[in-house]
Length: 233
Image (cartoon, rainbow, N blue to C red; front, side, top):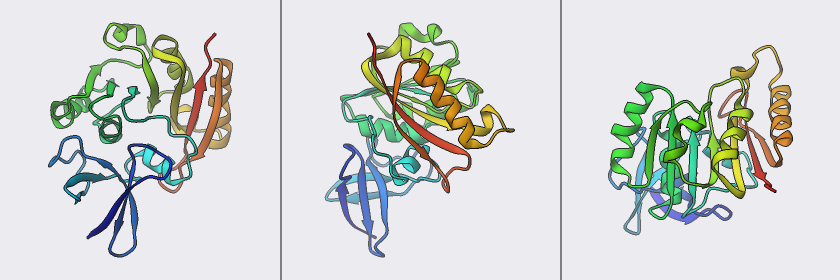
């Protein structure tokens, strides 16, 4: 049983739920009360419903628990989410940005997109699903307005390049990006740390300043979250 829900001390729109046994879990305020997205636990505190955020199902939650220093996604923000899949993390991003924000969800898989649309976007006013390939951002440029943040979680070899190409088209000046690097999608023969350095190098060459690099073990094997800021001339 939940005994308290309090705002995260650093990240706006993120909450900490405290349970009877002393356990503390991440949560977000449910923008679609009464509805689950991935069978996550729903809790009510002082008349407000929250969704417990499972760090074993969400790399963003894992990064926060692993000591992420900068989490740029905030209430009212517009976010481009590359690789939204069936909407597990994207739905929590939707909770965080709230009614005043928006999440543009790019997903290449038709099956994942059906789940995203039917289970998530249909019940949330602040999400736009786009069945597109993140490698070709010009194909969906007409549907996406300038965004404050880009979150990238794609299983492709050139993850940093894909993110940077999208940033060139959509990211506001001094906007932020978050890249969930999947080492084994890039090169299974290299050590994950080497792959992380390689992707960070690509971002630096594209005029990003790196703020944070957080390995995601034990929540995700051979993954790291990279946070960076774009400085446009």
